[in-house]
Length: 190
Image 1: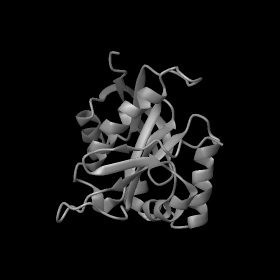
Image 2: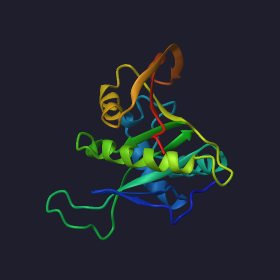
Image 3: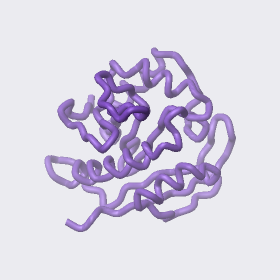
Image 4: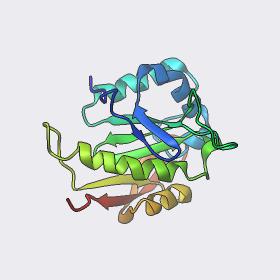
């Protein structure tokens, strides 16, 4: 079972990125219940906590999977620190070097995805540096549906660029056979 070190957290201006745990299953179920959030994924929406628990365990069982949750640290209304920050999404290496993210819909359009992605990419290249028995990746990539403009914008703001187009290579359970646009960012100079 591969679980990120619980002490490995990353704080940004508004967010905390911490390892995904089994205790996050209710939040993951809430995230996965929204058809719009799940629209461009390989999974159908479900609010079943047992399914989310199984999904988390599956993430932990795959060595190339390194997933975190995103928590909102600050009250957007008054700028104060939250005592119990809510989980607003996930981010991580789904199948390294492929990375991905999902946010609950009420947090879309506020810059949280860009903020989390920019921070996570640094963590990704640090983790996958070839040290301590880890693989080394010279790039990270994200697979995006051509119609998912919001994700394309997030990726471009985080210095990802369109690198490859694959035609009819993704069988989406709701949308059918889809093209995939692959965005990549390269390891920064050391």
